[in-house]
Image (cartoon, rainbow, N blue to C red):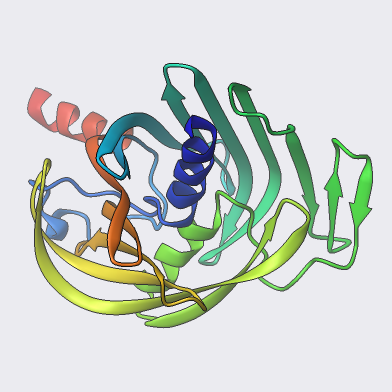
Length: 258
């Protein structure tokens, strides 16, 4: 049960996680009119998972940092009492497009899954599976994403005003189309406060499964809630509990010191 949950939590946060320029509830968007599309951050999450009458929580952390001019890294860590999981992706961000470079997946405890290490080579349009010593030349597609970067790219598409879009995602051993649709706007209340939000759906062929995310209707469109339902019943829910922005915090400190 824990194994399946951690895999799902990792995948869902990768699919529908914060991506561009997170803004807190109290932030004034007019103060950041020329903010870059990507801004370093650290976000703490809590996830509630339900199985019948039984439910429990798992904590997770997602960090985005800029390594150089166009090179970025996103990390995801999930912890439970008897298992843990970490995913890392290095990627290039240029002209509103993310291109993955290196992706790694590591699990421990009761998560019985093999390590994954992928190298994306844009020049030759190939994907190298370093754990299996295998090169995949037939899975590269224009705009390819890995299991962590594709929601970063999805939020960029929302920021550009796109209401329906599909992203090619290389997951484990093949490339799959991930489809998204903007449902509309609504006000929601969560632990962090009250938000005007944009609701998006990860479109699936099966109508029995529904996955929705709410992005704050502000520059950056940060994820503030995610819900997964099956047959109309809530399977799990994710909420951000704490958001830290190193660059914004430093700017506020400099301004208060003046």
